[in-house]
View 1 (tube, rainbow, N blue to C red):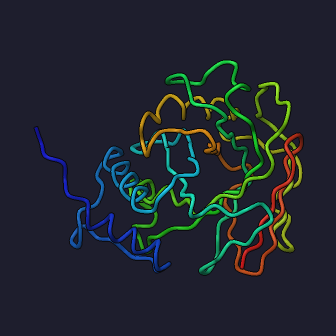
View 2 (view 1 turned 90 degrees about the vertical axis):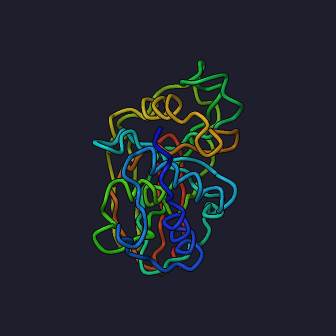
View 3 (view 1 turned 30 degrees about the vertical axis):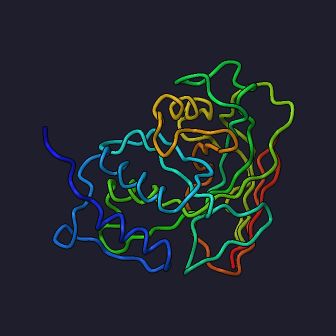
Length: 248
């Protein structure tokens, strides 16, 4: 059996980047880098352990060597609805549908009835990378770097949800003077519940598994625009409600 490769230098460099805000450009000659999805998830888990509690996860079907995409969201990066998010130079903004787990999952897969286990929320994902140079776009390194998550803002949970899916929705996102989205938008893949189901099928015990109170986010309704400090961000998803954050 082949012994696991030592990725500790890459883990340490990612952790320093989280602590200092300074990006770095990893190169294979400097340190061992992930060469498979499983190695990227090992890096995720170790960085998550060093950073503390996990507040949620992101999921995407993905393509190629990283599919499916899962990544933890650190509690340290959660910003209150209407609160302030610190910006190094600029932050990516994604308006999404999230699902908060209300009680422990009974087993793998999406439980039924889904409304007994999850409550939907409007969310804003904050996006930034700890990497720079060519490495910032490498799929396995992006996956290891928490799929470039930099924080989460959650609006209020929807009360009285009947378990119905979200596919095409009416939504609005305004960032400063820019109207990013105003009208119909579609959840990636066409179904928020399909993305939630995928997550529940694959997460297992990764980063502690999904726990009550954590939120799963299901993909951007608006692409990935970036904005600098001084930008007021407000979003709303019809039927779910508003969510907002100030970039400072």
